[in-house]
Image 1: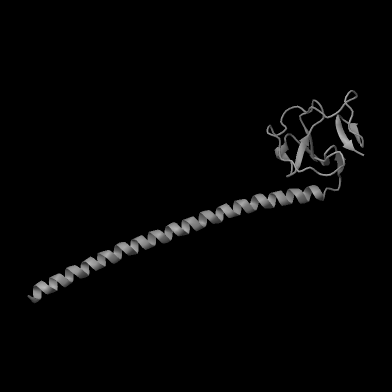
Image 2 (image 1 turned 135 degrees about the horizontal axis):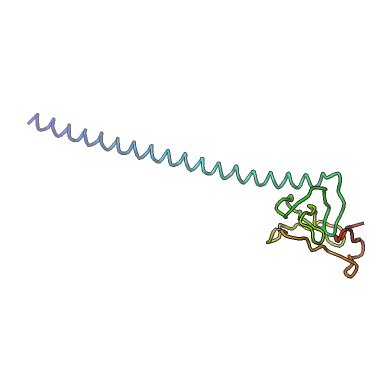
Length: 152
């Protein structure tokens, strides 16, 4: 009878050991999954922060421009651009008529107040259309320079 009892206890202990091994593996797996999720979330946070820093830096660069002049809805720097996507946040690539290269400019309204706009759906790619000519003058307070309306 003692031998039967010992076998029963041994079987029970073996079952408990297997249960603990299985639970230990599950706990390790849960811990690894949690670590992966934390790492994934940290990477997402880093990317979002990078986007915001880029926007802030672009805004600061636009505000700090020393060679700025105002163009119909814009203050511009002397950087050349091919599309809106090469310009800082809040700026657009404005091209004189029939030109592929333009200037990144801040869009302003007729009073010179900046209008926060994103890139156009086509990104402003292709030849420039200009904003003005002899037949289509600019609004009061703006002059037509190289087919772009520029604030005085």
